[in-house]
Image (cartoon, rainbow, N blue to C red; front, side, top):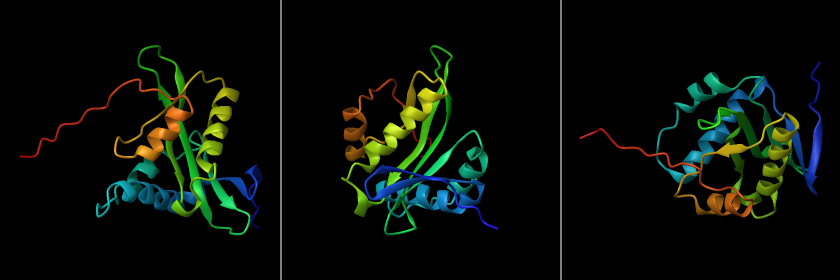
Length: 160
């Protein structure tokens, strides 16, 4: 017997459903969608390994679904990080994704608010995330919500 996960309406017409360990394939799919928008044509098969390594009971997952469709239109996957200055554990957003046809309706903001409330309830004093510089819509959203740059992640290619 399949028990349906509880849902919560965040904004009219959309509800949030708790993910489960059975959602690995769908999580990989949403991760790939996220990165393929920014880096089309790349092979993201390695994301399966990422999910296998990090998806656990301690890294909760939620799906945003519209009232008229049972397929998720967004996802929120949280994990843990440690502030390297203070040493405090805090929540970290692994992925926040909303399908393009459902954007600019407040879903991203609603997911962020949900994530922040979840983190506060478990005693976290801050929330972290990584955003690519070539993703202005996400940068704008996070800045509008009060997120500030704390560090810069730098890379150098070692290929000739």
